Image 1 (spheres, helix red, strand yellow):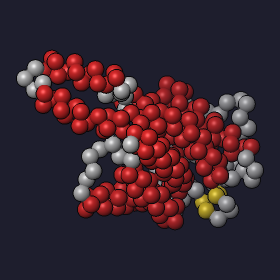
Image 2 (spheres, helix red, strand yellow):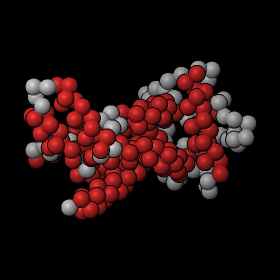
Image 3 (tube, rainbow, N blue to C red):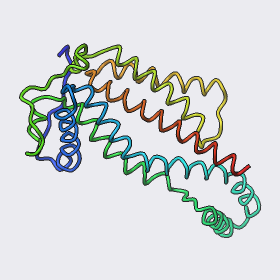
Length: 245
């Protein structure tokens, strides 16, 4: 397939049984029951399902990060007021966190929850959707005789596609812009913002172009859903600022 290589799947590995196997069964279940038996449509529906499942942890992370940002001036003042008493400084900062129901490490756990899922999703497309994938299907999931790699009858998802790679890059650009608007980090200078906005879409394009377009389609769909979720978070944060004002 134009030099594209896939990894070798070990169906007996613990990582395969815990996440890879359940997730790929969901994908093939969607492939079997969605109209048209279109692998591309199944990938998009599968991506939407996973993103919606992970969204609560993502939302919690973003809102906690925003509350931390809002407390930065008060934390800075406490550090100045108690710079000669480190113990008292730590106590007052923790008291402030408790009063505002903020967890200073609250962003870590939701991200750790997401990482195994993201790794498993990568493995699904890195191993390739082929006969090897069918070996781990559950008995209640219909087993296709042949996996049709066509998307809308015009694109072979087992091959590379610059169109899908470009789509993924555009969605990455949109998501990056929205991410900057809702960022809990201090605002960077305009030139650095522009660099951040352009570099990641460029990297996305070249990576997606070097892999089978099934990977690019998953990436594009995932990034588009992430952009919509990011937009939703921006609206929530804007509403919270209006209430605070």
